[in-house]
Amino acid sequence: MTGYLAALAIVLLLGTVITRVLLLRRAGTQAVHLGNLDKTDFLIPPVALFYFVRRRNDLPFHWIFLLFGLFILGCGGTDAQTLEGARVRELS
Image 1 (cartoon, rainbow, N blue to C red):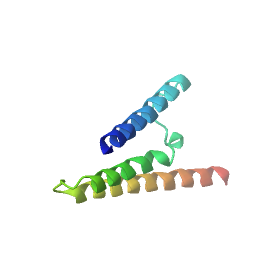
Image 2 (cartoon, rainbow, N blue to C red):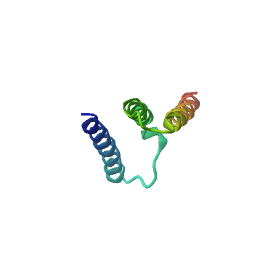
Image 3 (cartoon, one colour):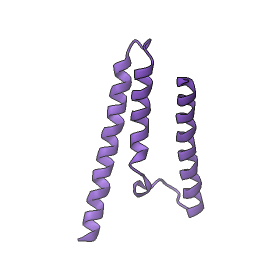
Image 4 (cartoon, rainbow, N blue to C red):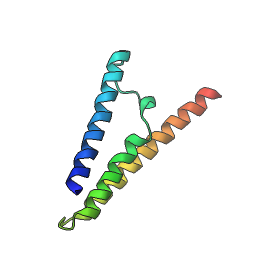
């Protein structure tokens, strides 16, 4: 059962990435613009990693996956702060 959930998570992540790439190409965007990122783009991988670590008992260094998830959350937090700062400067 857990294998099916992991496969479903991978398919959903790939679907999200492919959809974004197609939308960016249709709009004629050459580079990724951080304004197009959702909060979910930085929340799904850490949740998937946490789920993976909790289900697998045979990982010798399970903490490294948790730290990587924390790193992704940190990157998403700084990107969100950057976008919020740009939005506030734009409004004033």
